[in-house]
Image (cartoon, rainbow, N blue to C red):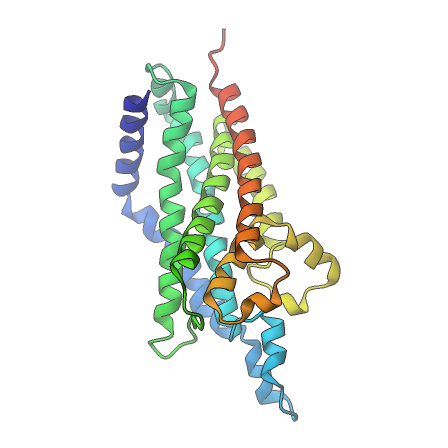
Amino acid sequence: MMRELGALTRRELLRIARNPQAIVTSLLLPILYLVLFGQAFNLNNITKLSPYPIPPTVFLQLYRGAPSYFSYFAAGMTGFVAVTATLFVGANVIFDRLFGTLKRTSASPATPTVIFGARLIAGSVQPICLAFLVLGLSLLLGHVGLSGLDVTASVSALGAVEIVAAIVILSVMFASLFIAIGFSLEQPQTYFAIVNAINLPVLLTSAALYPWGILPAWLKSVASYNPITLAVNVLRENLFAGASAYYPYSAGVYLLGLFGWALAMFILAVLLARRALAPRH
């Protein structure tokens, strides 16, 4: 079983590595968000329009301890990318079915669990790497004269582990779901319609992009349980000094909630994939 899993995983990773155009294309959207949206939508500039000085504590409340909107936004974009990049992982399954690749793989000695596992391992690598690239790019922008991610806390070893765990769990949970949906469907149009019906509401009801302080109470209630919000809360609490004062729970509690989401979503994904890959008589 492990031999088949390793072989299929290597094949999927090689296919990703041999398609650098797809990697570059995946980076374009987050780069545009960081360079355009993140730079332009800076609520700190309100101080230039206001006839009265605005206390810094107002912005700290608005951004839950982040020193600026861009810093708040950059952490959210890391979670945003970790989710959106997984859309294409499931789409690859659809195209493999159309080209006959999936049929040949299913006819091999590999079990449905191994086929799903190999797709999940290889498919999670790209969104995880893209998320960390966005985090690195956000830091870099601050050194070239633009607004950048300002890390104001001394990130401990435990904090670094929590950040990595949040990004990995978020990427794997959505990759597993979208891969399972890809196995269950046959037409790309149907796939993209369904995943967008899942992806967009999840993104837009999270605290990834909106400043927390301006959200209406009902949206705060919804966003508090959103898995993307849970992941970016872990990042923000660890990256910004004093940010924990603006959150009701510690980063570890949010990470535990994210793990609960991931477990439920993974079980659902496995059930969908096993049903789709089961031999049909």
